[in-house]
Length: 247
Image (cartoon, rainbow, N blue to C red; front, side, top):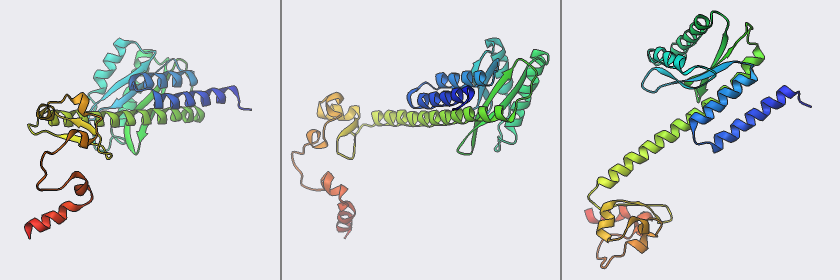
């Protein structure tokens, strides 16, 4: 039978794993991770700081830390200069900054431990836990914190990928909407997934009726004297017709 502490640790990790697959709000997920980390390590406070793509660092979430102090901390973190090897240069600077602030603001009454958030060999940030009593964080403490750091790193990595995909989709939508020619995007099954306003105007059909319909239900040729059908183009006939035209 597992000791109570190990059972709680297992349950917390399972909870975070479930939340990662269900929670779309990264801020809420990171807040839960840092709260659990502080609780499991008997800490009074904690934070997760993330490395920004354009340089500098910032606190993404915190537990038990006054907002005024976080604003001051964010100003200092933003001044960390970006480096092509952030693990060797930026991370030590962040750790030193947090250690010095911890000692100075608490008059030596707080101690802290931090571990990097690394996903797919890329430094994303750091998770830091503070204790209100003088005690050395043990190897077991660090191993436990590492398990939560790994979860946080994966969550941030997935959120960043989702943000990139969302931004790319917005750029594609904006480009498609400004094109004067009628355009549509099809799924492999030839179902319309997207159309632009120009196509709506040409067909005189609202996009709500176009999207979700089959290509052949929307595009009906009165005459088809030349060129290929969509099925012929998919079958690989396009290069052959080009050769004939050029011959």
